[in-house]
Image 1 (cartoon, one colour):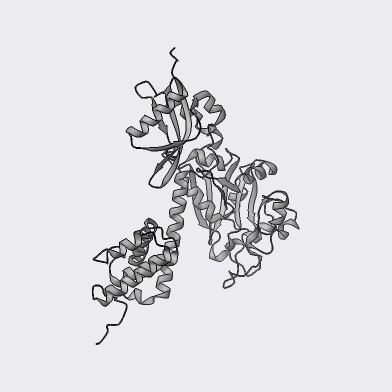
Image 2 (spheres, rainbow, N blue to C red; image 1 turned 180 degrees about the horizontal axis):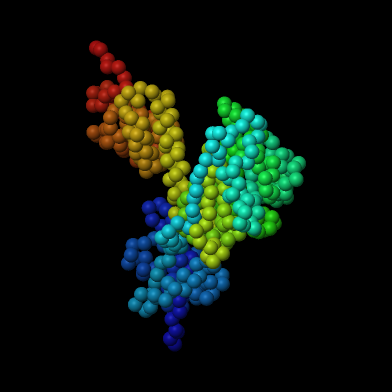
Length: 440
């Protein structure tokens, strides 16, 4: 008895270069067993490593039980390409989401000084600058001004705004909110020209920036935003983002209430309308206004997010890669500065740019050989700069690369590399340019 072919689907993993990616396998077959056979043949023909746990299900049943709702429409479109001649297709959600870029920026970012030099006064609190007022309380808008405040930045929070006539609520609920009371983010509704906004827009006196006074602008206190939504709607919206799922099933704490984090987040997603629509609440929010040094940054939307289908709330793979790369670059820059500070003689031979390139190259070498400590990267960088060659090529007998590639512990690798460098120096194969020449 012949059965009519159907489209089957199953969630799986594709393994490559010690990494795994979530995939959806679509198969055109008459039953689940034949669908499994197609997968086996496909991975053998294409030399792929695929894994899946459950049996393939008919597409309609898969949608009901396992599908990410935001991908259903696209899966229906892709499934139309299946046939007896092409019975299998690998759908990569991460690549699909990464390709959902618009050709133009979805946000407009304006940066401008908070106040001019002649606007500063000798008083404890500065008046709310004219530069920022139109962004907080525009005359031609019925939106309200709100803020997300990070209580962790000041000992005065949250008591300062709880004692005032400001509507506020912790983004954490119940016992967790009480436990984190002094370090949690809070939602505030800010009436026009409220005195508390003067404190937020005031900068610490020169030389006292590190002191915890009542002036908050230079402390990255959080951000302002405008919305026509109710307080409770906004509270429920932002509470959803405290913990952010990742594409690979982890759960991360998302410090979006830190303006430096939020700026990076918006810059990274500038061309991703569906992902921005998710954080902007599908048009729930009209603008974000945040401190940056002595400047103000304002983000407004170029499109109507209420007309955009929101994506799933998560950090996708391309975001995670960019975040990790950005974090790594920051750490490598800090390591470059530490090397210059602890080994100042290096600056007699190399510019900071050359040192940073050496740090970056040693980082790549370490990553390839399961060496993770920042200290190890720094030591190998200094060896490389001292000898004028990168650590993986300075040994003509290539014993150092063998040590790096070995199964030894990180400390053992460093020990034997140091021994090898010392031996090569004694043999005159390499020369440490940071040491005074020896007179025999």
